[in-house]
Image (tube, rainbow, N blue to C red; front, side, top):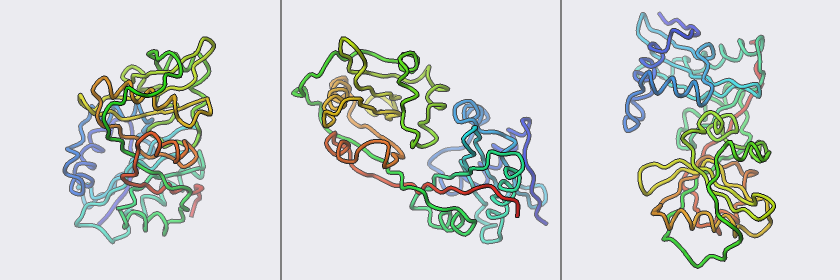
Length: 284
């Protein structure tokens, strides 16, 4: 017989076990979840154990929902049902239970960023009353360093705190994925590096990133405050290329976050897509 329950702060071990039982079979290359990694998600992404649920068959976890919560809403970060227990309504029940709880406690907005390739998950959210709001695109850039770019200003190191002190961090577009929001950047600031193009008066463009190995980096924020066709951003990327970076990954870019034309000019190409689903919490 199946049962379901929301979790508590002392259930991290249970949630880690449920993820490894239910999520890992679909994505074995990701490697198992660990308590340390789960605690990092609490710090970086504001995962709330009280917004997480586990489905059981007897004492065995057969389904898991991981929810991250901020004042703006709740993100269904992970939803997985063990392969032996699919098509039995567990995923829909987990979503409905979370919606009922948030309809009382808030915040009312619930969202999910679902890889386009996961058709069953997309169908589940659609059947559960979620509406697609946007298409988030994963971009990749792989090209040799180009030292011929026109210099637009001084290139200086910049940190998350520097941007916040200059009232620029809050100017990050609100239409960004959960993992690259202001809250996440602030939580991860000690591991994030950055470069900026600066004039005598202000910062004109910046990039925030984390290194994935020696030659690959993940872009966390890429902004220009000057209408220059992307020239300053190209200068920043060229600086990193000159330092040995060969591959840039810019995940889950909202269409309102940065111009597609700029990204193409900068050498980025689409490499995958996520569907942004959203719903208003309701008690059924």
